[in-house]
Image 1: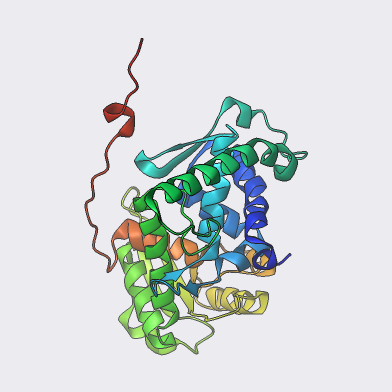
Image 2: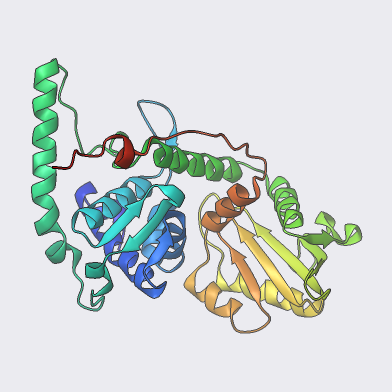
Length: 314
């Protein structure tokens, strides 16, 4: 199913069930970014949808239609009281109602939309009334480029993630290899300078090094492979080639990095033998942000509305 070909209002429907399923599988609570990573990793259709990047005609900024659909899916699940969304830490949590959902029979169109449609109709009417009062022109409330149901900080993070992926997609293959080696070094892997980037054609290896576990002082052999794509995914033959190279170098485990994603066949191949850590585009951005790798954190402040605007108690 090509989710992007669906009407905007239906794209969020394709995301709601996977969101609830991942929360149930995780015990009822995940960070917003973790939910995104999981539904993209576990669903080919969603992964294809998440890979699409567009440019706003209004601002010129890069954005992903997936992010807007995801935000609306989250908002509708909140309105239906299936989940709770907490600003601090970006935590999403199933409510008691959500925890009791039978995911095998869950149908977002039947179970969610009858509840949320009334909310959105009232919401739209209120906006139109406000626009009439101040004389502004009515806007298209469903436009991907302008629709936002979340806070400015979350919208900013969506834009930042899209910008990072867009910048990586424009790297040359050689620069992406160097970028990946530097990132893996930040994770504690020491590379063998003799067998560095120069062995790109040596059995599918882009880096060879060692990692020492600080807890038990055990040293393990690590090899990495980097694939930078503008389109397409890492396939099973590419993964099999990498597994063969790992065997050749007697690696304890491998790290395969791509700015794109892995096909289901490639994922199955990666779990058939020596362990392979697969880092796709979403996990790559997660690592970059967590390690603050060539990104600068900016401190912002947000009011706690529940405190400052607490309703007076009778």
